[in-house]
Image (cartoon, rainbow, N blue to C red; front, top):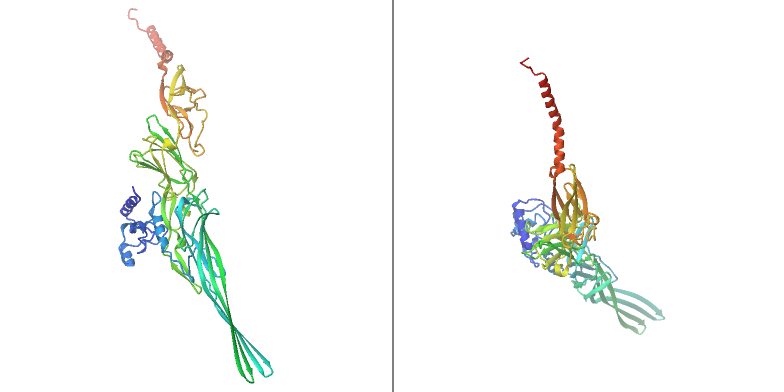
Length: 604
């Protein structure tokens, strides 16, 4: 089912339930649709928005002068979640980025979260990361949030500044001198003026862990494609800003001479020009981890030709899809929602004289992953694979890290990260398996026979032999062997565990007979004494092929014991019955003898 189909089903269910709860998302403002999405898709983006009470459709019409769709109405009353990272967040972010409008030489526009830098001639300079896509913010535990970045992606940023052009000035100095009948008056005027010659963002760089990985020309809205290596996903955006001003100084000297024969003026003027430059480097960082999806795959073929499959991935991941018999999905604990970056809610337009706050038209949206109460599951239910095991570290709920106004079905208490998922399915070793990560587009397609490690699963042979029996007990010898090689199977110690450190709850292999558990010795044998009659089922409970190589299938047989099943048992029964009835026989015999002694004789 597509994401949109899933969303429609969810909406139908919510509408059927008569949803009227407190909202956690406001409807998109009129005019904000169209950023690569239709109105229904954009309505799903706004987790973390507006936790006021839900507004009715009539109130919406009065406020915005238009009708809203059913999805908009539902999204206004709850947060919509997804089974896999939705594409809508990246599409919105790419298109909305162009709505950021920078200032000019006298105006700097920056988000309230920006780190600003001032220098001699440059004011309110900043470089702010808008978004890195594809990426997912994973909420893994209390206070533990990690941004996972796709190895190949794009970073978008905003760079702006304003130029502080100094004011010009004029200074005048007067002088007077008298020499006999001659008087000389002097005036020196100094005029300083400034003009902006040039200003630019000269270079932009992207660094990973201190190393430059990409460069681009100067731009107020840089978009940088990157290819990340290693694990450290700390990215730093750097921008060089250069400003050049012309400083013009004009000095005018005016001399007035007064003499008996008249007055004379002499004017001299000299102008000098210099260029004053200033530069600054502004930076911003986004911290994360490179999402390297490197699943390990192990498989086994059961005697009935079913496929046993185990996939392990160290980083959080969604699960995998088996492309056989129409396809089946094995899902882990993670689900997704989308939310805006609140640091871009408000912009500041800064001038030399004032700073004005305005609502931002450019709002990036991120994908968030969280452990869901829905938990691991198989799809389609009832017709999909059998979930054999799941394993991973135990973590506490990250509910407190989701932020305000996010209402999703996050786990309440501790949960299992589900690093590994093992299933049994009607498929074969050439079946294609698509492993899906929590970062959009990060998937791997594998085939067990080409990319996996084959494990050995053999059939076991379980036999029971009567050693001795008496009227009170039966002694049997249980023998467990490899059906193919005849080698004994010892249950005295585990052999070559694989996932043992993670499968902390696993049980060791054993043989059950009645309500007793026994283990075979190095010869594959165990001796058991039975002292109660009945039919005993002897069953071999093997360890999983996840932990043992080779592993074995289970086996069962039975043994019946009753004292009457032997000659000695019959003799013992006869003796015991004779012992029970002997007193009665003796009493009867004695009674008959005494009765004969006192019987009346009529011929006396």
